Length: 158
Length: 126
Image (cartoon, rainbow over all chains, first blue to last red; front, side):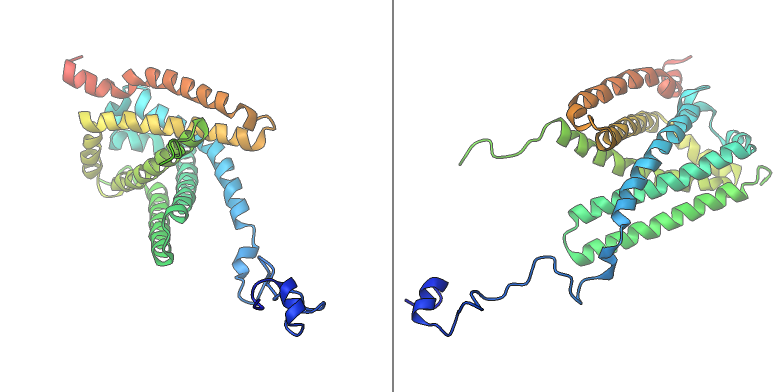
C-alpha cells in the first residue's frame, strides 16, 4: 500500500510522512486575506449601490410618471410638444429642477443597472472591462450634456 | 434523458427577467432622449424636426410601448422594495406581482387613447 492512499495506512507503513503534529498537508483557509487581496473589495460600495437603486427608484416613480403624464398623456399627448412647449416649461425653475434631478437620478440608476447586467453576462475579464468603460463614458457624457442644456437653455436662440 | 430538468421559473423569476429587459430598454431610450432634447441648444427648427419623428404613427406606438415598459418597471420596482424592506414582503411576493400586473393593465388601458390620440386623429380624422 502506497503512502498516497490514506493517512491512516501511511501512518502505519511510513511514520516519517505524517505524524501527530502533521496529520495532513496544509490547506490554506478559504477567503483568507493575503497580500494579493485587492483593497477595493473591502468597501461597502455594493451595499450603497443597492440602497441607491431603491431610494432613487422611489423618487423616479414620481419624477418619471409625472413627466410621462405631462408629455404624453395630458393636453393632446405628443401633439403639443415642440420648441415653444419646452421653452414654456423651462421658464419655471421648478420644472428645470425637476428635469435636472430626474436626469441625474435616472442616468445613475440606469448606469448602475447596466453595470449589474454587464457583470452578470460578460464572462471574459477584458470584455467586461471595456463594456463598463463604454457605459461609464456614455453616462458621464449624457449627464453632462443634459445638465449643460438645462442650465444654458435660451428661449430666444433664434 | 431525464424529463423536466430545465428550470422554467415561476412568478419570481419571470418578473426578474421582465424587470431586467424593461430596464435595459428604458436606459437606451433615455440616452437617445437626452441627445434629441439637446437639439434645443442648436435651433428651434432642429428640435421641431426631430420631434416630428416622435409624432409619426410607428414611433407613437413605440411611445405606448415605452409607457408600458416604464409602468411595469416602476410598479415592479416598488414590489422589489416591499420584498426587501417589508417583513411579510417575501411571503406575499406572488400576490404583489399579480397586483402589479392588474394595476399595469388598468393604467395601460387608461393611457391607450391619451398616448395614441395623435395617431388616431391623423389616421382616422378628428
